[in-house]
Length: 291
Image 1: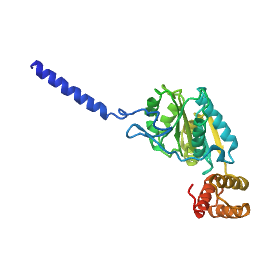
Image 2: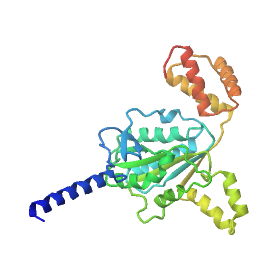
Image 3: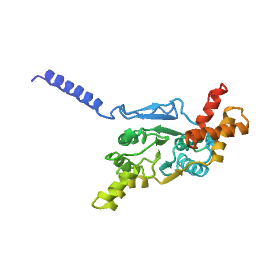
Image 4: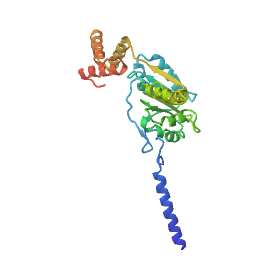
């Protein structure tokens, strides 16, 4: 074989190796350009962080009826933004009571403080279906100087799903563990992230029932903060609506507002922050306003 032939074969093999490497999952994963946005969505299939130009959120002060959990999560996130120790957080409980809204509002609130020594805080949303790609995301952002909150809304696992095991190792106990510049916040309607019948089934059928149940519920133990959200009473519900009306310039007297708000909640069969803002949107539309 001539020297020219050997060089040509070597060059061809190098091109093949480069092509195969480019096809490797996560090979093209890229850290965000930190000037693009303060929030990103993790596209696990492409291995990319996609900037979110406009985050759907409300001011922190407008979130009513959750004062205690608001202060706890705000303090935890401030510690993290200042470079101090902080915990991963699980926000669980009643639907529509502001779990995801609180995470987004705190992120914006802290970035607006302008406090000396605060690191820039970047919010990254990851879909529940992409939890298995979480280790890859961690490796991407661990090299950055900013501080990151990785946020998964409506996190839960059904029977026969095993992706929760990947999350367990990332949160606590894996060889790599969680990078010091990353926190993981999740919301769920389930305190233990697993359906009750799934846990009960393990208890009744497993050879070692206690061990089987512990395996299923230990994921939630990896969160240092458990913040519970509960259905609101009528005064809190009405206070939410009045706060929204004042914020968005909706003019309506208290007696009429109360009567219509109560009627709206009765037709929905619930009182919550979500029901409140839906009612306010209806009022705004009637008055020719966009919110």
